[in-house]
Length: 602
Image (cartoon, rainbow, N blue to C red; front, side, top):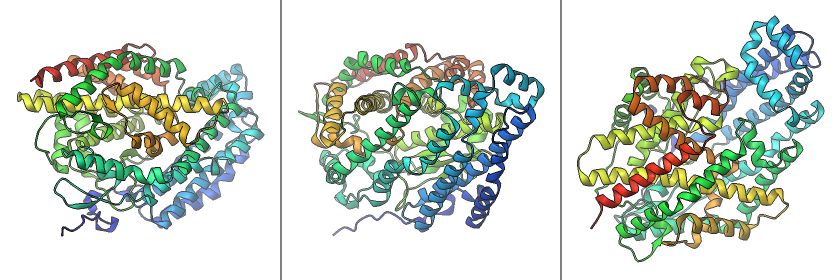
């Protein structure tokens, strides 16, 4: 009898395959010291309460003090959570994360008077302050953004009260994260070789790409069983999170939770609606892709567990991490030598936590704090998909690097709306490089299929997620309940709309909403689709125009939040207030569908 393939423990990871958290805090003891320093320094903020309009010098001292404390606290918070993500079962880092969160709440409470007091200063007086104190000029964008949202900022006492609710307002997301990362167990399944393996978040994606249909079917059934077992609990968590969003939106005088979420980056709600509308118009082309998938897989019925199966019969290529890094470096050559040097720096200086282990947070992300290099979490599994994940996350990381190097702390953190642009641009450049290097018909079909998969999962699927969030939050705003049956029904209907008549919607997929972590960061996912569209336009311009386009692109990367996101993208040559970028991306999708149809014609 074959032995079950066991997932390694954190202690079994090789040092070179883990991120170097010592660059943030050399020891846990230093983290503790930093926490103590913050506690001792936090009262300094109260010395400025009631005085922000006193003079330009006082206002500058206050915002500077807030930045110094905020920057140190950010490092404390990121370190605690990234250490927790290494193994979410470790109680010491559960405690660190909870304490960091508590410090954040205290900081927000101590700063609650800032916005109301600044808003009480007349614009004329504020302009006079800019003229008297040049140091305030770096805060001009922050003040402009604050004044823009004046009607949504509440009196000091209410702002202070709301800041204290943060300690429990993220409870639904925290509970879901603990369930999804630390507690849920899927059991074992047999892989293509008949070997019994433990199914994990990281391995599930690989199983869904298996050539063996029975493996895919079993993996989906086994994966969704825990979510079905706890469907009422998970529905209650989702509803609680949506109710939280609705509460804060109403308290702050927004028309909806969606409007409130988009307001922070000054994104018109029409951008969100235009995305959904453009994708709806293109669904007939997506149905062609679904029909193509059904034909190439040679199945009588196409099921949801067939969505990720490879369409081109090619031996599964195992790509070790060293190969993956080389492929990414070659694909990103159009971005210039300085970009490649930074990429190599990240690879060689342990910015990346590479492999999956027991208790490690699922998925992939890039994160970090100002003043320290960015970090990347992976669960690398040697698939082509994960090579692109590496390119994607390093796109995030280098976006952060450029912003941090060129902006002060207050202007460095780029907005969510542009967060997926650099990462997806990297993927687009990599796929074009790989397509350019092959004349083999079968290999070309394989790569085009991969690109089609990116469109499916990023532009179509994330837009479907965005529409699900819109529908469910609208229901909550209207006072309608979100129980299990309602959520399953809404999700099923959307799958039927997006996948069309050639897809069998399996019962398990009705619970997919219950395993999407991003739904606890509401109205985030639409930005994957808009970012993907912008990235398609930018990558095309870089490949066509070369250095001038790269120069504009790096201005965008270096912009942080010194401008509104839509303005920053215009600097790089893309206008997201118009439907053209999304429609252009969808036209590229149609072109690749046509190429795939021709390459695979019988």
